[in-house]
Length: 312
Image (cartoon, rainbow, N blue to C red; front, side, top):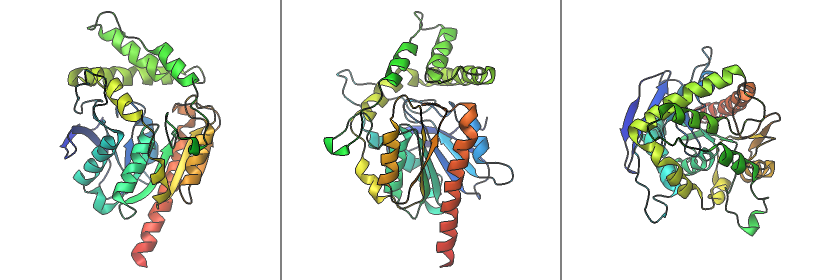
């Protein structure tokens, strides 16, 4: 695993991040979902997004309240500690810290990372945002307006996650916590996980737990990210996205209906939709290649557009 690096940002937190590859190669920023650290479900994707024959500079990071990034005390009155836009401002701050606003960056947002990514694209503009991938996400989240014309979220995903959630009676039971992290990690599997997937989940869960235990984010991530993600997501910004965009969705997604992915495609001018037929709200081994291929095809569109504009 690469070295942990840290950036203190104008938006408030000290973010932990890792980089893979050479800064001279096209940059891809991975933006994870709700209460998800960078050490969960990204290792395999990083390798696929930067093959030896066509390397990229891949960046991943811990959101505030995850991993080794800043933990914000939850409010005693239950009110949100910050808004979703704060998570987008964090990503913009990290991009500027790395100088990627000058060289350009491809954004990949998964689940809650989707609305964060399109807010980042809107804030940076087309000169800095080379492409956008919206993976397993929705244009609105839980809250909708009648004019959105979308079906409500599936209840199955919340039920499955609720069934999987549980904490050990002894707060110092490390093994119990690792098992809890692993149960949540695999809760939305639509097929029995393979031995390799179980081993990966166990290793990632143990690593993430120990990092979050050390930073204190294990105690704040769920409440604070739920507070930030609850209000309706800024769908109206999608119309202004000018970079190549791909929407990647799962036909069996237990949280976001396929109609939400279709609406994302239709909202972003020129966007395309790739549907993964045999998975749910998850990133199992069997679909990672197809997911990465869809993202990379969109990255190549962005690179070609940049090259064409440079010679125009």
